[in-house]
Image 1 (tube, rainbow, N blue to C red):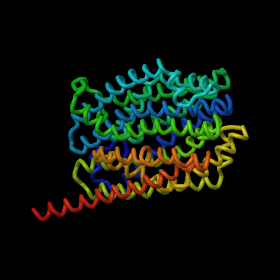
Image 2 (image 1 turned 30 degrees about the horizontal axis):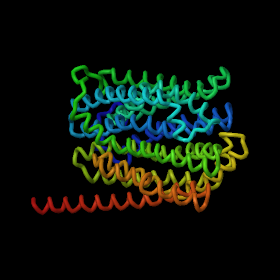
Image 3 (image 1 turned 120 degrees about the horizontal axis):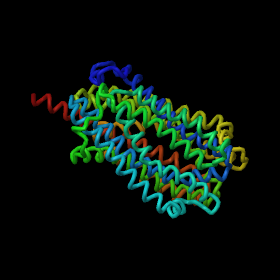
Image 4 (image 1 turned 180 degrees about the vertical axis):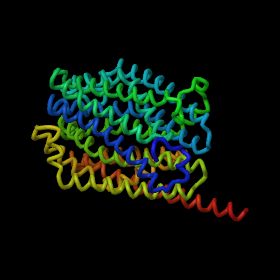
Length: 456
């Protein structure tokens, strides 16, 4: 689907073609987003040092909270926008757009402001030490000041994609990352601004991307655009945004809590550099996970539209294609981590101790990675059809039900390798729970359909 076509084509065009046309831009956008963080980490590691990498890793829990509040609004708004379009209700889709703007601004100011005030206490609680706190503080101060920009950029970009403009959404992310690639080395190496320069490069590049997104929604030729008649917050819309966005919110919020436990476990069994090793490993594996999430973002408007239009067969076909594609991607990540971990890790640092720790962690932590793609798709499938409770449960199963107990048990037996091993164990268990939930849903849907036909 090109960005000039009506969203109604989501209900008529071949699923394979639609999934490619929607997923490729989303994959590029998500890959670009992941490269955003990888580039920052590489420049920080090479330009500032190994301790800066460890300091950056300490910020992961807080960064997850930043993203959690953003996804609460952005993903929730994007999902119901596509459902409204499937129901041919452009008015409520426009109301959703305006509600997303207001909620992004309100949540970013409240969360960013409170986090900035208590930043040192938060970072120390998250596992910062005397050596890593200065780096973590310098990075997060800039990021928190820029949360309104980041929230609007990410939230509106999600809505843009879900309302029929996947290519434009991809380009906005691409523009932002290109700006970051240009600005980060200038700020870090030329101007010698250190880790704060990396954060400033991120903020400025997000501002550039936001301008692109705003121009799209101010254009009255866009399918969904700003209209002052629908600019007020509407309780029914807000409730639907929060109900659907609650799943990705809880997933990221829970990830924040889990990363705190991970960081503390690494500090206990390997020291600050072990936290840095986890930071490198997390960046690398997230690249493949983000590609899988790009597939789910491409699926979301297709599933949402056809679910709203009651075209169940098209919904099921999209799901099957999505699971297969995401599984291939994460399997490639598994192969990479097993065959060439050392060259990958050396991109981030020249510290030999950190290289050895990160390479070992990369091999162990991705042992169940081929299963991750399917788990991501299944969880997002339930989110896309408005089954918020199921999606929330699947999102939390890996983090709370499986990972935390594993982190409390395995490190005491296997030391630092036990911390690494907790990750693939929880991945595998969460996958089997997801498959079971999907099987139950499809069986019940089939039974309901048969009952309906018998009544007719």
